[in-house]
Length: 191
Length: 286
Image 1 (tube, rainbow over the protein chains, first blue to last red):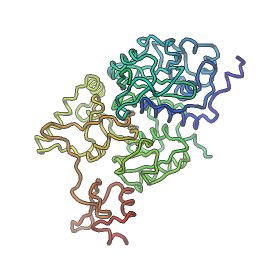
Image 2: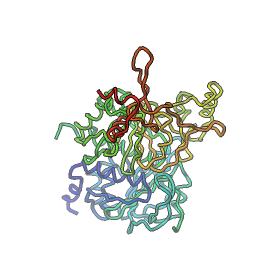
Image 3: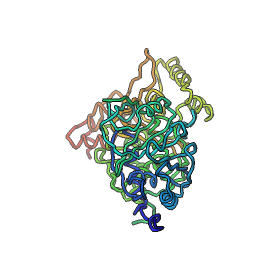
Image 4: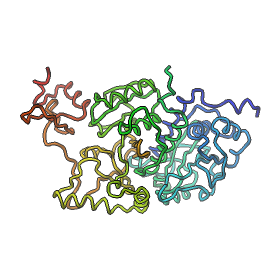
């Protein structure tokens, strides 16, 4: 990778691009199962556009980022450092973690918050090969009756929901698409 | 272009607020601490709501501000102008046109849609604060789901007044877990807290953000033999004749004459535009 790439691929107009990106991120977090488009950043391989945009929107020197597996390469590190200044940390210390599901596991490594401060927990940005509305049934806050979403590992995510109000929160990214799964969502397999 | 960053706040502040909003949405009713900034308006004038709005707005939004239901009071006008100047967003007084609505102490009468966001200004976010002044203790009470004290408070209302006398900032339980202060909205508005829109709460001085996602179960605390009642003045609006809206009582003269008008000015205006007429509409037309 040329040094040129690490300086490019950021937001063209940071305040505006970040505002639009956050609105999409907030909407999917408030409405688990919904899929929105998220673009603005052009991150280096293997990060998706949606994952890169989320990182630029939410990360800065105050947030520790854990790059898991293939996502942890020199280009991604240089790009993220230049655009966000976020420190790279281990899974145990991470505010944000990004990577493929298998690379991110085990889920038990991440902070789930404390009983007094359940917000002090990690947010995982999970890169997915597919993202669609045919999958596990979701119920809970933000969902009228039921919604559906393709999930990488239903059993592990059900375990996370059992920790409520503690637990991790998830964004699922695929290309320019993003969906979210907060800890408050109840998950049942099948339809 | 103007000399401000989009929506006044710097980007790092907005990121911090945005992270708090996301955690708030993931844990409905839980108060997320955030590093509230000084804003160019005094505490108590909606600095929390303004910061949440600033972090939420995009240039495509249409912004509405209400203060006790009214679009034309000082607080509402100044915040609306603030975002016209710093974010360049379109503003409106019509509820159905707005995509982001910042509110002080009311929920609009019109049913909100799922593409709208309601931002509340909150003075005291902690529903247990007047019962237990120590933050360390109220944190522990929330973590243990120990809400006996607030039921005692409601019980004392009944023993003293014969009914639950709490009429605003009426405590609710969100998604069967956290007891939450819905900000000082009248309890008439409590049933509307289960809505299609995203609800965000910002307390600037107290440095807390919390949220209620759409379609979240919100239950007003009560007792089996003293069920929750969404009360309002037993009148119709004297301007538009609405019997289903929350009313303000206005003293008319020294003789004790009074009138009741919709607190939601946009609701009242649109009803009058549609031809509805209240008891005193004629003489006030001038």
